[in-house]
Image 1 (tube, one colour):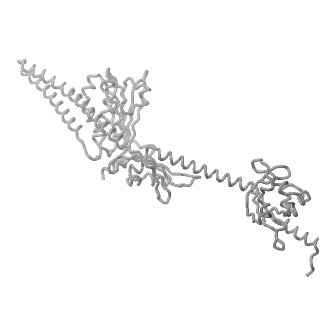
Image 2 (tube, helix red, strand yellow; image 1 turned 90 degrees about the horizontal axis):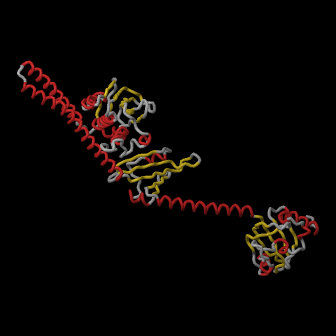
Image 3 (tube, rainbow, N blue to C red; image 1 turned 30 degrees about the horizontal axis):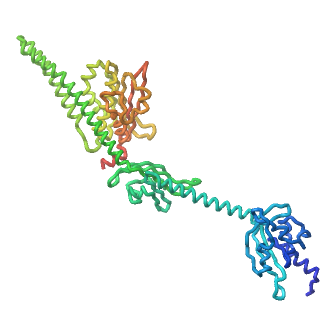
Length: 482
């Protein structure tokens, strides 16, 4: 094998150095550059002739990152010569010919000949972008940790029980949730399962000792379900207050009904009293028989009112099949006297309609409330229109019945319309409880139906209440039937 000449050897080694992917230069014991490869020339921006023979520290390593002068006596690269200390991947700031700086990862090894250090070989690579990416990543992690901590603080500060579930059914909860149910999501509720299935849902259930309202939603990222979150609120006190208000309204309704019944019975009794007086004063048997027949008719009217009252008071502990038309006639019979006294024209058209599954007492309470409101709105006379017909719900397609009660009263003010179905809102300041329509709306919605109102003041004034009820029982009523 031929032996390479010195010049050829140098060219060979230089070619090897130039093919390296890192910058490389050599130093003698005085810190002067002995060789440099192509990558180093490219990074520093100096020509190789400018580097070889020059003090490398003064050319490319002369200042600290903060701008202070960097004396050679403190340069860690020179420690390789001074202390025979290997330098492994330190990060430092270096400078190009144009004065711009960059971050470099530097390693240095001593060159040893005849057991003594004769120079240093330095390798480096620019890591400015890498360091920037690492710093950005670090800041992103810090920001994520901060946001997570803030979110945790918000969740812990909420006065509601918060449950967060992962797709593998692991559940995390805040301290209020732990107080409410020991951190376990109530088994009676299905909202969290719905959230994991990608559905929004709201549900109120009775647990062992309280009422819980749960609102849940899926946690989504780029269309993928990462989990579910449910916010549970203890509504026990609100529920108890609602039940107390409903009982209060029922008592008020009973009182008003009793007043109506007393009025209905009082009229024929007064007639009977007058007729008995006429019988005692009469000397004509023909007149006596005539007066007695009239008295008998009035007694029959009292009997009819009594029967209707007993029927009105009939209650069922479970939903039953109701004939709404029959129920409407029962209620209307109790207001016959008031309709006549107030000179109200009643127009009742009840078309054949299917029976509905419902609580008879509750639906009767709604009908009684709506009719009474209409009559109260026409103290000086008017027209009461009642319609009943079969109607399929346009939203769900479910079969049902539509009951409409309209009057020609003065109408409801726009301000009152906004809060008409809220508790304690009334147009009858002295006699109204403000609970009738609120309770009625709750009853209809419990039965899976809807109630709405249209009203007008001024010309063509009046109010129309419309109630739709499904033929089949809603899920909550069906559970009570079974």
